[in-house]
Structure formats: structure tokens, C-alpha cells
Amino acid sequence: MKHIDLMGRKIIIPFLLLIVHFSFGQTAKYSNEFLSIGVGARSLGMANASVANTNDVTSGYWNPAGLTSMETDFDASLMHAEYFAGIAKYDYLAGAMALDVRSNIGITIIRFGVDDIPNTTDLIDSDGNLDYDRISKFSAADYAFLLSYARKSNIPNLSYGANVKVIYRNIGEFANAWGFGLDAGLRYTLRDWRFGAVARDITSTFNAWTFNEDELIIEVQDSVYNFAPDNSLEITLPRVILGVSRDFPIFNKFKGMAELNADFTFDGQRHVLIEGDPVSIDPHVGIEINYNRLAFIRFGVGNFQRVTEFDENESMTFQPNLGIGIQFKGVSIDYAITDIGDNSLALYSNVFSLRYSFNGKLE
Image (cartoon, rainbow, N blue to C red; front, top):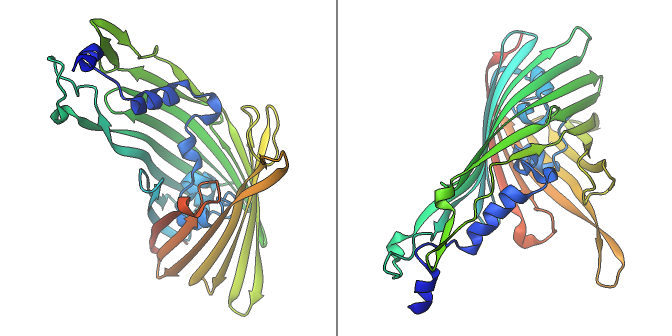
């Protein structure tokens, strides 16, 4: 009990300190990284190679220009995924509609969070006794809200679009941040070929953090230690993604589509296939095979990295992805199994998404 008395009335568990340090001490290249995970089991099964072929409500995330290729007046989609054995949960909800024959709008909501984290800051009462009833729980979650607009240009087969996005990041009662940014995209179709380009955070996205100093305090022997950093500004630098896809016949009613994407980042050297400073390039490729647009199977490879082994030899690792889907009368159900990056079967995640298109064909 003497040891407990020395700790005073308030303690911060190491896990909480780690969250605070990671959230506010990270470099710009990892800012808002939850927005790089991807949405829709179809795209995740193709290793996120979707910038050029996207043509439904998920275009609000992948490339807003793709909204003009929607085949119906209204489109809605939702997705749920879990990572790290269910510790982290990733949810996506989106809707899109046609304004007229040339323009579309959409809205996207994304949440990535860890819930039910024990808060032991009040574990010890004023008399120095452990009181487990004083343990509460909190969530650490990131939210993104995207408002999309897309329009067909006067140039045949060329569309353009943009996103206005609002970011909200929250760590219980300890800290929160608001951020704002813009995305822009282009999509061009030439017979069986499609070309896409999207610039994310084109003006840089700024997250302004605010801290609750009263919740980030440790008292030891009547001394008060405040672990809250100064209010700070976190900046997400621009990223450009280029993509090209092509449809091809296979046999009878079997058809295929392949897409190659390349992510260009400008925030210094990253651990990707083509490392550079300040520009790094991360390629990824996906293939989709369908039967009469009813049943689909998908493959994808991405996240190429060079790894130095213990014997100093260098090897190449990559992230494999696999997916299937069915589509009937406007309802699409998709499934993907995707690794989080280390090629370990124990860390594969199962992703399901549902999409519903309705209200007839566009005229």
C-alpha cells in the first residue's frame, strides 16, 4: 500500500501514453493514414487497384470522377471489417445519386476505431486504495466525411470530380482534432481502356489538435505532472494515384478486367517498392473475372517491400488479396480476404460489403 500511496491519486497506463505519443508525435507521412486502407470488398480484393475502373458509389472514395459512370440513379453501399483479431473496427457507409445526365453527387462516412479501452486514471481513490469500480472505458476513433461532386466534361469520355472532406479524430476525453481537405480526380475512357488520376489532399489536409489537460495529469507525492503537449497542427501532404485498366474477353460469357495503379507520395522516403526522397512510388495490381456480370472472382497484389534478412540478404515481400462477389437485380454482395502486410495467416482480415443500385437506368 505504501507503493500505491507514492503513485498518488492519478496514474496513466502505458497504453494510454502510447496512444497520446503516437497520435501527436507522428510525422506528416503517417497523418490520416486510416484513409489509405480502402473501401469496398471488391476493391480490397483487387489490392486497391480501383482508380480507373471505379464506376459506382465507392468512387466517392477512390476517384470522385467515377461517379459519372454510375449505371443507375441511386447507389448505396456499406462495409464492415475488423483488424488485429477484432480489436480495431473499420466501417464505411456511402450514398450517391445523379443530379442530371451529366453530374452526380455522393457522400461518404468512414470510421476506424478501437473501443472499450480501459481508463485507469481514477483507479486509486483519495485514500490510496485500489477501486476497480472507478475504471471506465473510452474509444480512440478516426472519422472522415466526404462530400463528392462529379461531372462529364465537354470532351467526350472525360469526367472530373472533387471531394470536400472533414476529418474528426478523437481519443476519449483526452484529445480531439478537426481537419479539412480537398481531393480531385479525372477519368477517361477509350474503348476497352480506362485511365484514372486522383490527387488526394491537394491543398494539404490540416488537423488541429486540442488537448484536455485536466485528463492528462499524474500526481506523485503531491507533485503534479501534466503530459498534455501544446495544441498542435498536423499536416497531411498531397498524394497522387495514377491508374490504367482494360477489359478483355476470356471465353463465351466469361470476361476479365485488369488494373494497374501507382501511388506517388511526396513526404519523404517510404518503405515501398520504389523508395525515394522526397518521392516514393507504391504500385499495386488487381484482376477481376466475371461470368455474365453475375459472379465475380478477384485477385490482387500490392504492398511490395524489400526486407533485409538476418543473413543480410534482401528479399521481396508483398500483400496478396483474394475476393469473390455476386450481383443480381441491383444487389451486389462482395467478400475479400486481405493481409495487413506481413503475409501471416493469423493476421488476415475478412471483409464484407453490400451495395444496392436502384431507380432505373440513366437516360
